[in-house]
Length: 119
Image 1 (cartoon, rainbow, N blue to C red):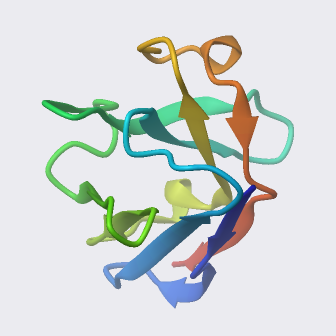
Image 2: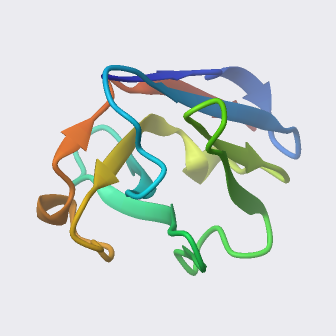
């Protein structure tokens, strides 16, 4: 029900825009989040957006921007000034009960899109 796209290979300092399209239900009342998982590491919080606020991990604050278009049932992650340490599989997620930053708080997950940043 969540389809992430937009990943790819980019040089350090470059930009990418990830999209997460939802289908099967309306997610406008859900909190939407982005997470990432690098090889050998746990999945970690990147950003979340509710109907009234946005939050970011300290590691991406000022470089990444999360947004949503409820009419399109889509959430975006604009990633600027990318660094090699941003390399990971990025996942979008949706939570109905006002989730925060923990993965277990989100009920729905997309399949992930690979982001690779070369130095």
